[in-house]
Amino acid sequence: MNEIRRYIVSSEEDGIRLDRWFRIHFPQVTFAYLNKLTRTGQVRVQGGRAKTSTRLKIDQELRVPPLMFDARPADAPKGDVKPLTREETEFFQSMVIFEDRDLYVLNKPSGFAVQGGSKTFQHLDGLLMGLAKKSGERPLLVHRLDRDTSGVIVVAKRRSIASALGKLFATRAVKKTYWAVVKGIPKPSQGRIDVALTKGQGPEGDRVRPSEKDEENSRHATTYYAVVDTAPPITAWVSLKPVTGRQHQLRAHMAYIGTPILGDEKYGGNANLPEGISKKLHLHARRIVFPHPREGVVDISASLPPHMRETWNTFGFDPDRYETDTE
Image (spheres, rainbow, N blue to C red):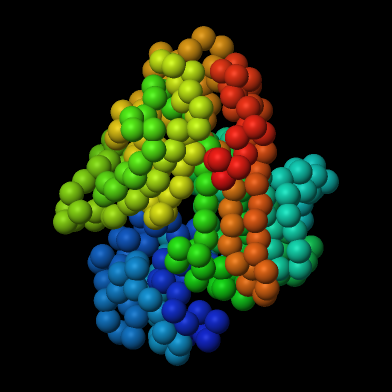
């Protein structure tokens, strides 16, 4: 995309945040990239500067500058994208744990990226592009998970549903529960972590760190946690419920209170792991609950990935026994 483009906010997009609008229309744009575009005034709403949190109104005009990649509409199949192979189709279907005419809910494996990058060529967004070749309309990501985080992720089958879900995800109408195994045992056994986060600089640019709330680029972040079971003094199984949705929020918050998530090499969770425990990240998006854009409620839980189930077995944790308490 090598020219400035202008878009008009539709009735379906009324009230949506600017970062959600970009996530729907241009999922290739990372939050860090969008933050740079808004900070430098390259993205404008009604001719004025805007923040990533700016809420859009119907009929407003968005100015989108030249981007660093092909920025055709997100639901338009790309000419060089091939339909999914049989193996890719089977892999995608193996992730589906719920489907109706409007959306998919997937159980994403640990280690599978949601979006592409400089060294990432196989990712969920690529599979969605391939699906567009068959259906004529590209399914859209509604939210994201880190590459190494497994579990539930929602995909809209068309733009109108993505827009409706984007508005929901911008509020507290969506309830998420994560399961994790951490080093040590959090004290107290349940609580609230209310610590602002900011993206690191230089070599630490792929991480976040605690910050003061008035610090530049600092973003408010809140997480509720509860210890479900323990294997003292080594580790604990915790249930995590984020109120906000910041990059690496759960990982940084658990490290902040001194109990990093097992296998988390970025935040101190891979040092001195117990013998026989996988070095993969032990963080799983277990459950998601949200109002369906049409009617009713979607309430879906995803089974643990193999490496986490092995850890559960090693420490004697029983995911079925504590189902009610942790969700």
